Image (cartoon, rainbow, N blue to C red; front, side):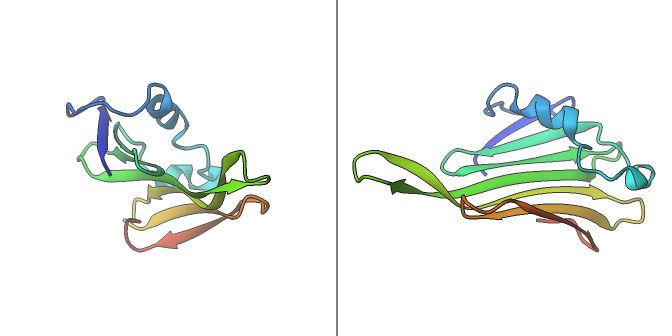
Length: 134
């Protein structure tokens, strides 16, 4: 991704819109099931990446050993659409949102939300993965 913003730890260039990173840092555990909260380590600092050519962002949270312990990303694929061939708007073709937490046994609890088309409701599911999502 093109831009990098970091908070709390290593210095980096900030290009992510103000407020967007703060929200992620406040709500990193919003989708974490309460039963799993004792199985993870909370991130101490974050690095944020923002893509300017498409609607996409990615944030990583790091633990005391500077290892990733939280990941979130969101991207939206759109296309121009029109109802009357005069006014155009962006129509969502596909979107994905992911939140993942590293468990203390090094596996990852992943929550993924997909939406196909603008008329369909988003669908989310949890899964355990042996490796960090990319």
